[in-house]
Amino acid sequence: MTSDQSPSQSEDTNPFLRVSGQIAELILNAPDRKNALPLAGWARIPELLEPLRDNAGLRALIVRGAGGKAFCAGADIAEFEAVRSTADKAAHYDAVNVAAFRALKTLPVPVVAAIEGPCLGGGLGLALACDLRIASDTAFFSIPAARLGLAYPPDAVADLIEAVSPSNAKKLLFTAERLSADNALQIGLIDEVHEAGALDDRISELCRHFEQNAPLSLKAAKTTINLLASASSAADLSAAQSMARTCVDSADYAEGCRAFLEKRKPVFKGR
Image 1 (cartoon, rainbow, N blue to C red):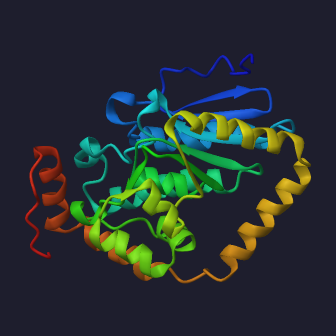
Image 2 (cartoon, helix red, strand yellow):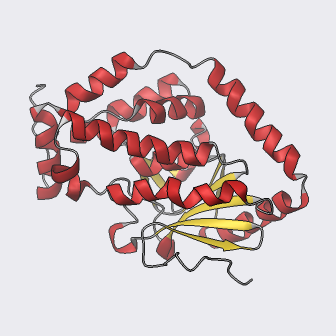
């Protein structure tokens, strides 16, 4: 298929958008860093998706990582000292994250995460913002926030709870354990698992369904389900947001980031 990519698009950016016929792809594009996203990359996602909202011919968006070996290792922790070192900076960072998640959740067409290899932290938040999560058997999942001394964004926690139940969400956040694709499927974190060589075929099959089915029906289904799912979760998040700020102001957060960059185990003090 020929690409409808606009001249302003560049496949050197992270991420970038590719549109072919009725299907768009959001490509997380830093394969040498397991497709981790810098702050500028998170900010770019809503900008890339905005023109798609007026694309009457669009039937689906696929989110995938470049290189075929990783979906997304989450945020680029190497830049945290510069962009996430204070509570105010962290609040801004989380707001940019949440804007990216909401851009996916509110896109009026089905959004599918095609997951290979690591899907970690903010990368998992990105996948949870998609309507469907289809994984290869190479995929694995973790939320390492507790190892860094930070709080996972409340919006992402809400999506996690919706997918896996409160108790499973707590287990993932408390332990920061890694889940295999099969274990992730078992608790509802993902929707399907396929052999690595069959993932693209399954994504193509889903796209054919989206192309053949009534666009207004798909839009109505997505809108209705999202509204009903969120109706019971309009809790006041101020307490959670306050705790998130406390985490960022803590010595443990600074220690967690240093330990990650120095490739050692962190020593947390609870303050």
